Image (tube, rainbow, N blue to C red; front, top):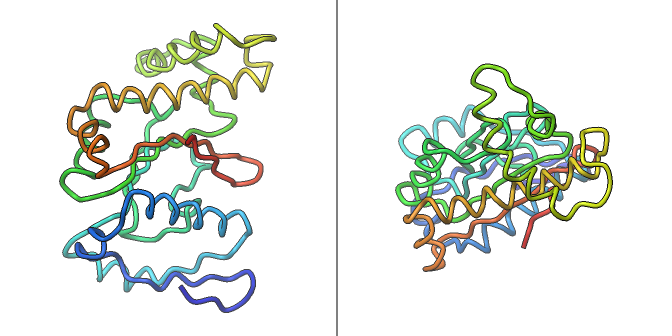
Length: 220
């Protein structure tokens, strides 16, 4: 990475090769994402040589990590971690919930394509979380929100204070519980990923994105 000024970073590194990906440990990748997020928070401008990166990655990809993010347009995952084309897989679904297709995508990213880290990334002020708390029912949204209801119920067990969407602290508590339960579901429902984690081939972590600061706090 080249730096032209205090607030400008030009992302000129080429996408990883298979050999370079293999040399990274899960902890290496976690630290890379943490550093990238620090740069994002400090408002360093990301300038990407997209045309060249597209060409460099056209015949293959070896991303470092896979991020399961919410659908929310205010969470630009690649920018949040200061990454470019070919750096990370991103799976998106409202409420960053787990289903069969998401699990298959995570398995593909890690077992087939060699990613070393899974990040379940939730965020503040999540509309899906609020809708689950309010028990919204609308078309296929209803079945999606049911996947968040266990987090709502878990939060209600210990949270002190108003347990509704007028209380931002309760929304945040449900958000955290939902991330934790998604991480737990990955381990419980994917034998492949559970074994890879046990063999230290990958790490599975949760994280939450702060809408006000851009900072990602990892659950470790």
